Image 1 (cartoon, rainbow, N blue to C red):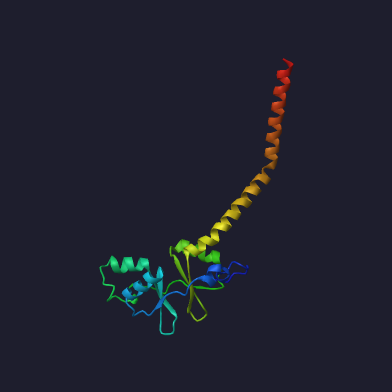
Image 2: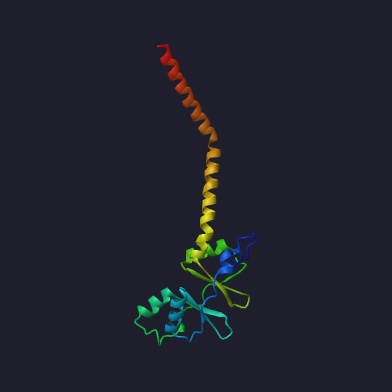
Length: 179
């Protein structure tokens, strides 16, 4: 992923980058029950699985728990995170472009994006919800600009239409006053 050249367009420029709590991190040998207990207590939707050097090697989400544990009939106390995690998840750098990742996440259908430092250690996790806060103001601004451009571009049409309507009203008044 290429870094953005536009100020305000990188992941680190988003307010969420500094304000998000530190992600929950576990070793691959931790049990799903341990991770779910922490996720429930802190109201998190995922945990990051790290190796002994604290580098990201996987991510386990609520969906992984449902599909790979509950649906498979496995026991949370004996199943490790390594058994259900998504290995080698897509990871971003703080200098990556917001719009690029928004597109990639949407196209590839994943909802959580670990952001790592140069050594591959977790800094923050962005969710699709974080990107919604980015897109709504931008979409509203674009809609306003389109409306302005549309009215401005079509101004001669309004002027011609208004002139014809005014001429028609005046002709009706003049014709009705003659007869």
